[in-house]
Length: 376
Image 1 (spheres, rainbow, N blue to C red):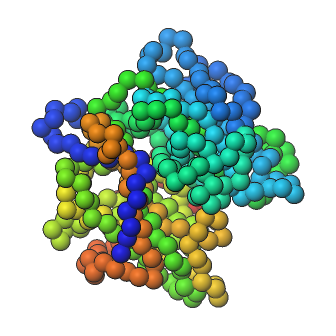
Image 2 (cartoon, rainbow, N blue to C red; image 1 turned 90 degrees about the vertical axis):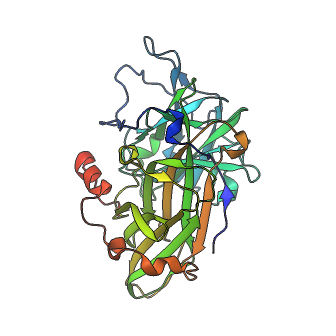
């Protein structure tokens, strides 16, 4: 089956609330504003690096985070590294934007903690338990090499919480970084608003454990969870992610036996958060969220699910909108299953093209718009 654990934002809304209509708000060139000054900050600075732009709205500022690429080279190199930055309470993240040359990292994850796992400017953090001190880790955003950033719809923002916390920049660095590039940094910039938008943005993470067997052409791994909220929530965006043996991934809402496609794609492309607010998709009480990953493994060894690029992953990231009327419910969902134990008979009726990434998909449009190429 699955286990649900909480990590970021969640609750309800209805059309009767009179919220503004959804529309797309892409950062089309995914470049920093020309009038943003270049700043140099040491990696792991826990003081908030803030850029206030003259002439801009008073309720918006930028926070720049970076981590030295030298962490991933030399005798003491690590595969995953973390750095912590202070995060102000009662504000809203409205954009995540990677900056600079991006080919030196596999992916970056942004999390929020009450306290970082380590007080060092940079520390090793491959295991999830080494990101935050204690178990209160809130995953907010994930990015892979080659993807554009994510600008949230104007009606939503990621709530930073009601007390000061730390934001953790977790970087999965490549193992072939040149000595020349090692002097640079992995960069990510946040755009933050101090005023509340109509909706908080929550995240649900649907993942698969277990392993991919040897000598398989179309091995499928499934995960499904019931949407157990009492009121509807609109889907803002979704993302698909595997490692090198994934050949297709799909996500669905299953409602009264009907399969409603959230998205399909080739997971070897970068992890993009596809903005789907213009499709007006809502999660309803009693819905089932279902995801399937399809793999090809022609090798002689089974491939375990895990965090290194030599292992596999199957993650569906689902961002949705919720009202800010209960702090107890502004958290996100985690849902997991084993690739070896498909506990849901619902997958007996999954659409025939669930393992086919082709067609007129969100990903196909983004590939054309952003000139995306395979990461593997």
